[in-house]
Image (cartoon, rainbow, N blue to C red):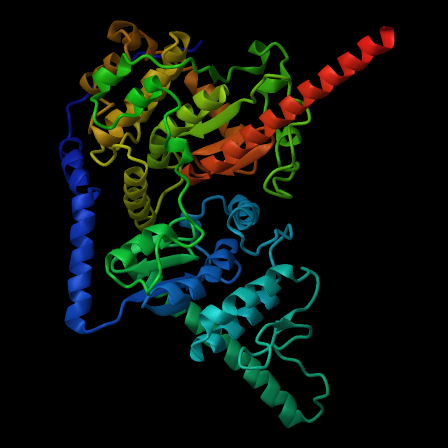
Length: 566
């Protein structure tokens, strides 16, 4: 057990003092309402229709899903849709691009099944020439005002095309307007004359240049408006990513009176609120946004088994404690073959048992903060253990986060927190020393049987109460709110063993084909994002059903054995 002398707490900085005040306004529902009202006044003063910008990345699985909602949006609302083509996100916004690309396909396939959309993960990205041809066809569709009608078919053809075959797309102005066999980039079949060859090649070059210019224009507009991803919607100074956030846009459009006659509620992409339901009164008290953390800490709750990853030598050889590529839903090179591949082959369901939820989180992640109480509530409801897999924040691992990404994540996390009825917004960024101090106390709090109370107190303290966890005063308030003694906590701060645990957790996360938090792994299913808790719930329910089936089959075998002996 490594120990270090605790550094003397420094004086509170001006940034630490001002950040909670500024963030509490920037992330408040009042500021959001004010910004929306200002955007509406500006639209009316200019005499503009309700313009919804849509940014489409041709080889992005989430864009392949989002474009399938465009025609429905136009049918439901009196809007003017403005589509744009964009490039993949910059490296700074996609620090682990290979895993992002692979996971996006698997995740999109799972979303398609959930929402009744079309997308099948082919296991690899489409070829560059097919992506270019599809982009050129989409440009024609944009010129003809048929993007919403044509884009879904073009996307389906692109992702269905074999990666080793040449694929092209008819002009959307043709009879079909959908992908066909053959290539339209610079097809010289049957062309013999020099002039004809030159004309065909010049036309192909012009199409390529037009696509490049369209992408440059789309990228510039997306950057100027403040985002970095494809499959995104922008309306009235606010961003909405993919079908996961489309319900926020729809609610706003309905509030503005743009819904056509008979339209009520969102499209098929309603938010998942099932995990918001507290399974018992005790958990309900812990999640009550109206109680200060000190009052919440003493609330009685149903038992919840929390596990902490330890070195392999301390696990007694129990394979249930390990996560590696052989037991996850990926193969050894980090690529996946589906949303899940059944159960962990090394951990079969047992009658009456519940699989463990591996919960990967960061104390500096706002999405981790707003999903943590819901993870615990779900685990308690399903009687499932939770293994706490904390990792260092990306920025503390040398991965810079662009300004547009930081801003969108903060605003989106606040919007999602309000959706789930969770406090959020008066934050004090725990990057650096506050996070290290917070992580150092997790093993100690776990040993005291108070890990859940401590983690909830820490997250709420830094993300909704503006507490500076880098100071003794701030961390002491968090520790006491969790019902733990501060004197012992100060001693525990010298234990550096958490760093090894965090690194093992990071490696386990990468082995699952994931890289960001919050992420989850349970019963052979891996998922990333606070809005993917439904996948965790479905995996638990599926595994529980398999356990009940095994129990039933065991009883049948026992009955037959007794009958044969009679």
